[in-house]
Image (cartoon, rainbow, N blue to C red):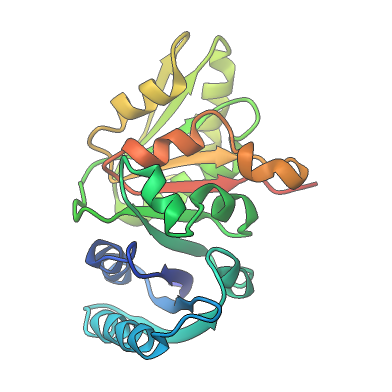
Length: 254
């Protein structure tokens, strides 16, 4: 199986054992090259503490079972800009996030919306409260942000061995059927379960269907300099309330 490269962002106040455990659990299923990226702020001391914390995190991952190689990088700057240098060669970016607390994440400089908008790779936000539910992979689709999300979700379902639930809120049942066929063509061995809701609030529907999910995948679109504020009606609210990690997959620009 091909080695996968993951960039893991670590910053005081947000990084947690839950994020490291998520990466370690992934290493048990697929060979990983992990780049741990930690940030020291401009003109602020404490770099030795950051280095020590990063080395402890690296040692923890190296002790995990599975095929895992870990590199550490200490960068002066801010998140998420510090990740961009490493993101371009990565399969995934993984960040910690406090559920239900967007203000905390904003004050600690993470700007999850900005991270998802700028990253070339899909970004997985792992809740830092320690929960790691088992269950299906859930992907929410709409008419603008489906292809990348379905591709990632199908591959994640295949990797985990869990079913894939494809959710669409809207009048066009055909969009759901097409997404299900796309998922089966990407990973022919997975179980695909369609979930069609003709009317409703997409965020509420995703939250209900994904109550026991192991991963939720949502799409995003980039629209120029304001793209960080235009990630779609589902992506941003999903980050703050779901128990499962949330993967934001951006559609490729033409």
